[in-house]
Amino acid sequence: MAVLKRAIRGDTVESMIMDHYGKQSDELLDLVMKQEQNKHLSAPDAPIVLDRSVQVYMPDAPASEKPRSVTSDINLWD
Image (cartoon, rainbow, N blue to C red):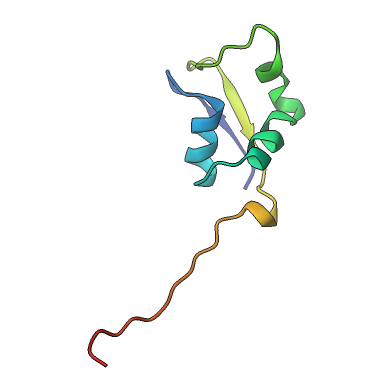
């Protein structure tokens, strides 16, 4: 689900990606940074470490980047 997230003091875009998507990758970083709503993050004077005044738009992750849950049944007594 796409959402607009407010940074907390000391956040980076990468840490916000990890918090939101549960993983980090170059593809997710590119996806977030290329959003029109995030053009302020690419400005020459954009800070690397963010504060509460910064909002970052987190779009839906592409299917290839969505975490996969793997469950298997384990029986220790068989």
